[in-house]
Each structure stands twice: as structure tokens, then as C-alpha cells.
Length: 349
Image 1: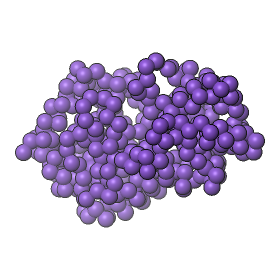
Image 2 (image 1 turned 90 degrees about the horizontal axis):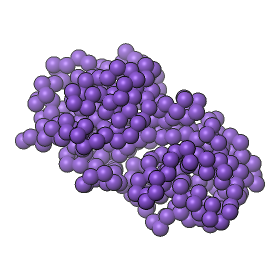
Image 3 (image 1 turned 30 degrees about the vertical axis):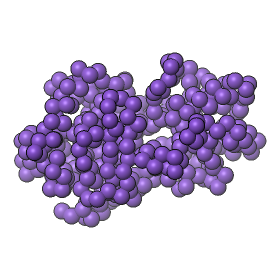
Image 4 (image 1 turned 180 degrees about the horizontal axis):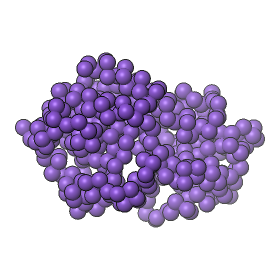
């Protein structure tokens, strides 16, 4: 199976997903990665999970996100290189991406359905930095593509290296309020909190039009004070006029090529696209937990065709019967000891 044929099959699967086709496609991608990535081949050998010896995608060895800090995982020369913020521990995860067009296709198949709610070329305000400011950010890559692909010509960015650009944000918010057409704000939780701080200090209140959407992603890393999600939502309503029904939470990470989304209509459970599966695993045994029980979250992401498809995260959550999940927080160092052992297996020479 060649890379080109797998890309073609994956594109077909994304357009017409089939539960029966998911497993075989995942196993073929794993076989390609074993043949192309020495670290994955070593892991397959040490875990006794060579491609010819397994028949279920759950048997594909897990690659911890920690491994992305030390291993070069790519089936071909990368055309894009994404790096994490490095806010936890030492070093930054690096995701080498040989197939950025595949990444764009996956965004096109999931973002509009979950975040646009029928909006056609809405005006967008991004509180996520431009790629010129953060060229190795996968989130900046995604948002830049979304703004170009789905936004109107009067979309804008209101953030730079020094933080929120309040004059731009104020002008954009005022124009959208006057026009009355639904719009879209894209923000990290941290940037949103900073914008709301600036509006509060100046006693500025806006009422974005009904049907507008707030895309919110990421945590409140690096803040001196804790900001609860409830408080952030309350301030979003007070200063932007957007209630909880207008908010879409995104779950994504540098090490994955796909995103999950949660909203009021999903009872705030994160929903995954058809080409991704999630598991909650016992932190010591890495055995699947029963539905609704807490565990380390692991994702089989076919979008990671170019790197490692079965990724064990440092996040804790619960998986529902329908494959959606709740995010509960970050794992403790004790819970991540198994991840370190797997990284050692990847690094064996």
C-alpha cells in the first residue's frame, strides 16, 4: 500500500465514512508507519505488535505525546512543522506534517459542521495569532485556513506579539453590532479573558447579533489568578452579548491532526469526526475503562497518517457509549509513568 493510495482512501473515507472500513484502514496506516518510521518499527517489535500479527486497531501500540518531544515521527519529509507551547514540563512537542493539504481537508470537513451553524462567509475576528507571528503553531495554521476559506473580506485579527489589539477588536465588535449580521469570534481561553478584561476596564459592552458564534479553545495557562469556565461564560454574556448557546469549545493538540467540539447541543460532551476514535484507559494497566469511567485519553486519529495514528495523551476524561467524551483535566506525574516507559521503547536502537 503506497502513501498516495492511502491518502486517496482516507479522502474517500472522510467523504463517506464507514464503521466497517475504519479498522482495516487504521491497520494499513499503521503498517505504512512501521515501514517508514524507525521509532514506530522499534515500538512494534518491542511490544509484539507487528502489523502482520494484529487484527484490531486497538492493538496498535500507543505513542505518548511525550514521545513527540524526542522522536522524529514522519513517513515522508515534512512540509509543515508544528510545535507545542511547552507549558508543561521541559521541551516542546514537535509534530512533523508531510501532508498539510490533508490537514486542510480535515478542517473543511469538521469545522463548518460544528462551528458555523449554517453561517455563510461570516465576518470573523481572530484572537489567535497570525502564522507570521506563530509560524509553528498548529492552531494558527488552522485558524488562518478557516478565516481564508470561510470568512468574509472584513474578517480581522486583534492579537499580536504584545497581546490583544483593543482598537481593532473594539472597531470590529462595534461594526458587527451595527450591521446585525451573525459573526464568529475565534479565541483561546486566555486571549478571550484578556479581551474581556480590557472591555471591563473601559466599561465597554457589546451585543453581537443573534446567531453569532464564539469558538473557544485551550486552557488558562500561565495566569496568576484562576478563572473558572462559568465566570468566563458569564463575562462573555455581559461584554459580548453571547450566551452559552453561542459557544463552541474545541479540543485539540499539537500531536493530533483532528479536533473535537463541544456545545450546549451536545450537552458539553466533545464530539469527534468520523475518522477519529477515543478511548479512556486505566493509567497503570492502559486497559480500556468502562463507559463513563475516568482514564487517560487516547486517540486513534487517521488524520495522523504522516506521523503516529494511536496517541496517548496526558489528559484525563470519560468516554460515553456513543463515542463522545468529557474532559476532566490533566494527569498527574504518577499517572504518566507508563508513558515514559513507552518513550524508552521508542528510543531503543
